[in-house]
Amino acid sequence: MKKTFVLDTNVILHNPKSLTSFADNIVLLPIEVLEEVDRFKINHDEMGRNARVAIRMLDELRHKGKPGEGYPLDNGGLLKITTGMDYDKVTDLGLSKNIMDNRILLTAYALKEKGEVVVFVSKDINARIKADAIGLISVDFEKQKVDFEHLYAGWQVLDSDKRGIDKFYKEKEYKVAKDKFHPNEFALITDNEDPKHTAIGRFKDEFGILMPLIFNKSHVMSIRSRNKEQAMAIELLLNDDINLVTLVGPAGTGKTLLALVAGLQKVIKDRSYEGLLVSRPVMPLGKDIGYLPGTKEEKLENWMGPIFDNLEYIFNVERKDKEVKGKTKKQIDKYIKEEIIELEAMTFMRGRSIPDRFIIIDEAQNLTPHEVKTVISRAGNHSKVVLTGDPYQIDNPYLDSSSNGLTYCVEKMKGQSMFGHMSLTNSERSDLASLAAELL
Image (cartoon, rainbow, N blue to C red):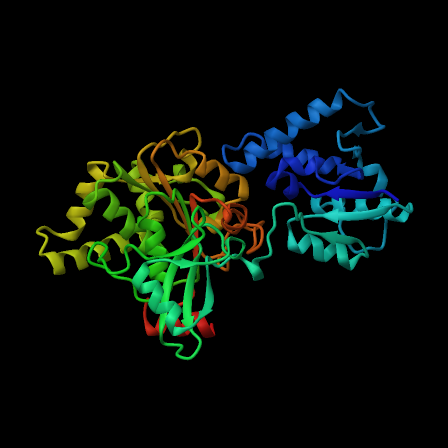
């Protein structure tokens, strides 16, 4: 028996392709959903783009069917649009019909009362709870979700013996089965008899071997890794053959600091790229930076506080170790003025082609899968993209740890030779930060 999937507005605004994502079943849009989508179409953000795409899709489908009968879909399903007449007789549910979200729920309930197998689909947790309360089957839109509890970590433990580890250090390679590792995945090779006797290798898929870390002993802008995960992350960040790197972890694990350190090293010291471009989503209530006074740089300074904090820390360490002359703030301003360091709002990334840059997208957990795709596709020739974020700290109301663009990217890209990932778990910010991350 075919099911009827009633879509909430936020599902379409999250992914307009949801209209054709339910196989040969019936997709039903209450008229209220169309009204809400229409209000978003003038926006210049991702939701506005998705609203316009959905409207164009509906217009194309409109020519394939007859008014009132529904529109046939290529997958064998049927798209229907229904009006408020379906729920006029529904009473005693405690939901006010003056609220748009409630009318969408009541439409689904009315269809269920007629004997249809109805599934209410929404990205809004509260809407799903209300659907459960009135006896409706309710689900999240799952098409672009991953199993976050089993997210690819980027490294694994490999048991060995003393002889195997000693041979690895001597011959600089360790033969492993190709089907056991993803490209650029790391292995912590551990002695069965002595857990402290270890080695770290990175998998080279074309040879089927683990190779020692290249950048393990070097300082990066006077900063060194503090744990094995950071050492692995630096290996990915400094390797020019790896064009896309994702760093996932809670606050204090050093994601942003490592990305910036590596970017500055590659741009200023190694001159491997022409510049460092840093961006992060502007998430407070979804407003873009146009509502703040001042130039683009002055506006961005309000949102780029964590970036400036890390830059000041890096250059302060550099000054102490290398006796670099000049005040830290002036040094940062100089690099920004010379466009060696460029700060950009996500709003202005669309449509750009960015060649020969080390690109860092901080707080990428607040991006949708489509936004991450848009950002990565901006990379031109000889550019490297680094995404950092904490999937447990998401400000976007319609994303969670399993559906955000960062974790989606990790799972989709993990088999590619130009991709590397590291999940960081150890907080190195301070003892207080570590305690807070663990207990609060």
